[in-house]
Image 1 (cartoon, one colour):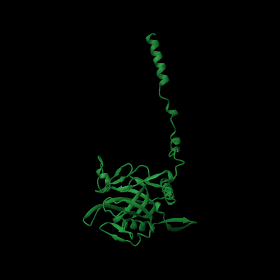
Image 2 (image 1 turned 135 degrees about the vertical axis):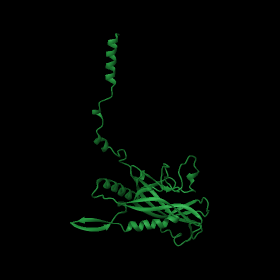
Image 3 (image 1 turned 90 degrees about the horizontal axis):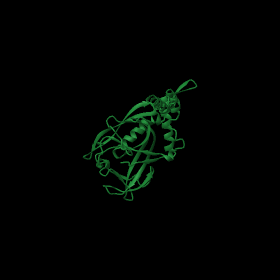
Length: 266
């Protein structure tokens, strides 16, 4: 084959293997329409909601080789992703649940016995021992009161994601205060031309949670600090409406008992 013929052949081969024209690329509108596809039949029963907890100096993860977290940081308990405690995280509270966690009486590494509803008669009225930070039940076992908020975390994560936040021990008072603030939130709506105030759903509000050092009984630990970041505008803002609907859907899943928690709640 002459050099001229070889060059012609090479040119033809390059034309056959050249990248396809950008005109065949997927239109952006089509791609955006595919957002979330593949999860159409996923319900709350198919989801495992992780915890976001505060890393303490006595947390088990502090003993893991290569763990880079420090006390006072927030940690995603499944991915081990860390969030700065002072900068904090932003969440939308979607649902609240209170219950008792019954444990054995050992102060170090107590064994889990059972989980009971908020009106559990054995623990109600039981004496609280501040040194043990537990209630002593009538039958001798110990119990911790747990207050749990199911939230949609919207920052610093790029995509809103459902998480659980647990309040217990010294943080119970803060959980009660948060519920008190949520219970008095109102929003204004216009019905038939008349403006009126109604109680706002909790999942209309955004809150910043950061961590603060606390002391007591010669011990130190990190606790929650809550700051309101305002309200969503689901009626007047399309972006807020989308987040609001995600939060409302998550509320419904938790309320009907169709989600499970995942990871270790320290």
